[in-house]
Image (cartoon, rainbow, N blue to C red; front, top):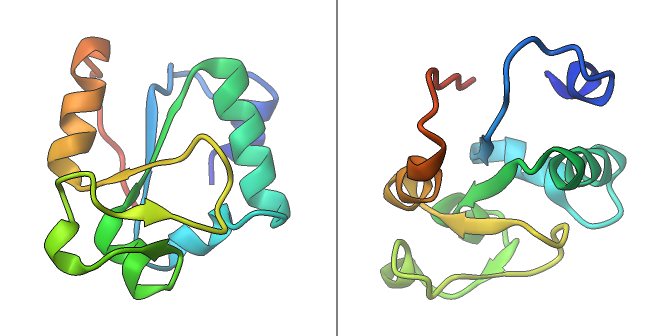
Length: 106
């Protein structure tokens, strides 16, 4: 994880967004130390935090149903404040002004 590098401000690349999916979404629960650290760094460095709406529903971290994925109908619960939810099309739209040079995913 790049979190320690971001906290030390020595990552070497400007990070404009982080997208969480599958079980990585659990790290963003309220009160979970890693999620709170990610939230702090994102606020300080103006990093977009977004999670997969389908993944959040599957893990009971959101309310709604799968027909609402991608259209803003999924509402997050028990996750850190400031987290947006959507699919890859919403991520691309949100990051369009930043014109990222690289996309890295795990």
